Image: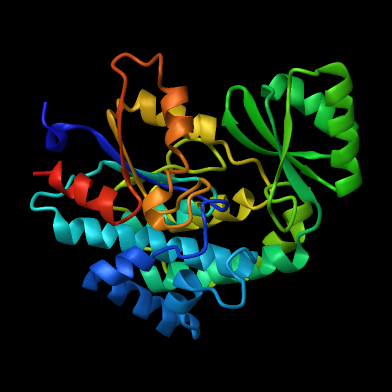
Length: 326
């Protein structure tokens, strides 16, 4: 079976996959990327290329900037891929982790790029302004993590894998939770995450209430692809009001990535293509590795047949992905 005959999903990572210099290779190599960054600058009123590629004021990790930076990079990767591929893959679905859900909605034609930028800029501003606390990734299943989180007044923030649950709470509460884990479960880990608040928990209710006005005002078109919902773990209904409500609830409920991946597997997806972002210690785009690859491969390792995976996160991997699409 050729790649063009596969059941394909385009996926997009979330916060934590940003890095200084993001998009510098794309802007250097591709006119399609430069146009995408120019549009983002026009919509938001600041120089997206300068912020992403140079970041002289060290703003890329501030949530109000992180989210538009990631959305722009992801859509730039997608646009470059479509320009390079002679016969681009035709996905049947799209999905994203937290912020990445907005890129998926752009890929599906539900949101325009400009409207998605305005939404995530407001979302990031509100999350940064009203967010409190911190987050930690626990190497625990949900059944074990939930009573521990409840005991320490922390909320479940994400279900990344069956054995990786993200929690959020006040610094002192997370400290107490981590100390109890170290004492009672010494082989398990609580890994602090670099965020400006306890996202996707009750700490985000105020931000969500204020974000609802922005959601109410945005226009949404019918979807050309099925889009995964972080809130439900299933596919969105093709209904603007329902999609908006799911995006509202997403802000203060766990990211059900396990559910999203299971829905993709149940839908017989056999090729995941990841656009944008990057993690790892390397300095430049060429040295970064994909954010979601590890979770996808770990979750699907026992699937039969096992889905394939392709990254499209920098100039080299986008060229490779485009070359495989012929």
